[in-house]
Each structure stands twice: as C-alpha cells, then as structure tokens.
Length: 170
Image (cartoon, rainbow, N blue to C red; front, side, top):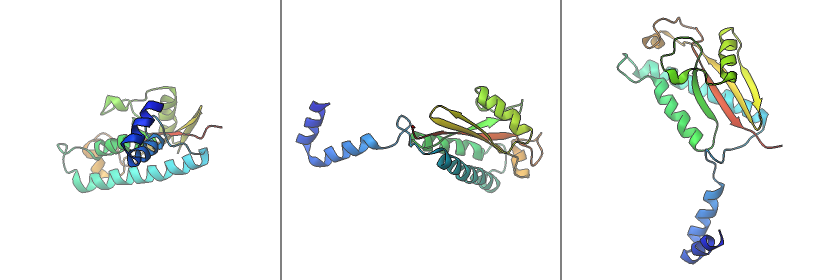
C-alpha cells in the first residue's frame, strides 16, 4: 500500500485526493449502511417511485407486446442503483406462471413472502444478519398491464419487489 501511495504523491496531490475519496465511495462491495428505521422508510419511498414510474412509463409508451415492457427498464434502474451501493431491488413473481423465470422466488424468504403477499399481506420483512429484506406487492395497476399479463385482472398481486438493505453494524 505504501509504494502505491508514494507513487500517487509523486504524481500530484490531485490524484492523491481523488484516490483517497474513491476508496470511501459506496459501491456494491461497499454498500451504504443505514439503520433499520431508515431502511424501512427508504424502501417505502423507493417502492412508490419504482411502481409509479413503471405504471406511468408503461401506460405512456408501451402500446403492444413488441415494445420492451417498463419492468425491463426498471430492472436496469435497480441494477444501476445497487451498483452504486444503495438498496438492492429485484422483481419477484408471486404466481406459478412467471413471464420471466429469473423472477421466480430464489430462497426461503422469497418463497414465504410470495405466499404471504398472495394471501393479502401488505409487507413481509426479515432481518438477516446485517441486512434487512423487505418484500412489497406489485398489483396489476390498470388495463395497460394486461398487454403482458392477459390472464390476470387489475388489482391482482402478480408480483412483488424484494429489497435488500445493508444495515449499520451494531
């Protein structure tokens, strides 16, 4: 470490400052850590933003099955946010007939959450070490959603968003 630091000092103080700041920036490997209370509030905000943006984007731009669904665009947004060390988010299917198998429940938490959300639970949470996982339902919002979900009715809890938030270490 010291030779690298010396090389940076010799090349100039601006590089040294940039390098020291880069080490502290949040990333997927160095996530932002917040309290459980802040995590719940952050997830509530993100859920409102993500779900409303998908519905608005879909109803504005998606006119037929050939247009990429707004959910695909949202997934790219989830990936970009997580790569910067913020909350991880993923789509999860609540039904047996997934449009995308990658959205099927992946572990026991997600399987249990899918069952609970289908039964009407408004939220499922689990504390796992230094992270909080939260699953929130995503119902079919309006008839435009039936372009991709023709067998489901408006209001059906066809999916969920699963959030994983890094918590402050106690």
